[in-house]
Length: 240
Image 1 (cartoon, rainbow, N blue to C red):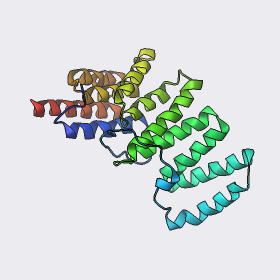
Image 2 (cartoon, rainbow, N blue to C red):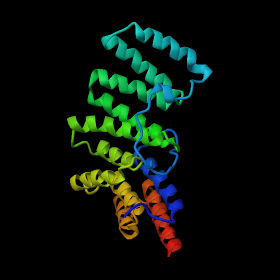
Image 3 (cartoon, rainbow, N blue to C red):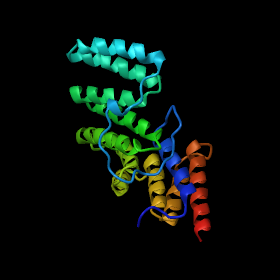
Image 4 (cartoon, rainbow, N blue to C red):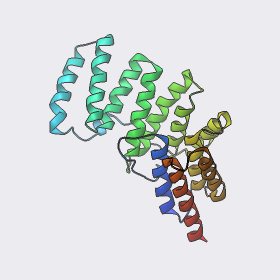
């Protein structure tokens, strides 16, 4: 069964909660419909220009990087990623971090690549969301190739699949997490979201109720699970 029909408000609520719960973010997530089709990977040419207040600093770092190699180059590229991230340019930060990971082939660099693309995905509501999600997935797959038991990374990868043309892969990945750890909070919560998106309202509510048994009533996750339950039930009432 496809995504639920006639419950747009639920989709907005649950996608917001999915991103907010799966990763603790500095910037709020922007909910959006999953991408309808695959799109090519994004590059710097697809991005808007840098703001004037950091353009000079970025240009100076890029000039410095061009004359370096090896660890010295990676060090300055990491400084560039930090500059771009702190300026709110997750898009360019993600692309530079992708270059770093490609050179170092370190799992920690691929994880940061995935996290930056994931965060970039969450602030998109247009055609760039799907490609950003796919690039996050590609990076997370490299982490999991080295560390298949990293359940947090697999959960984030599963959530990213919701913004591609293959959301059911996300369901399969989240099930792998829950098979390994039935009490993984973020996986359990996001599984409820996935179930709600494919019309399995009762099963979705069961997941959110289970989350509530795993946390204290003062936990933000307890409140978010309550909000998700109300959203699912309201959508069900409206459709009936």
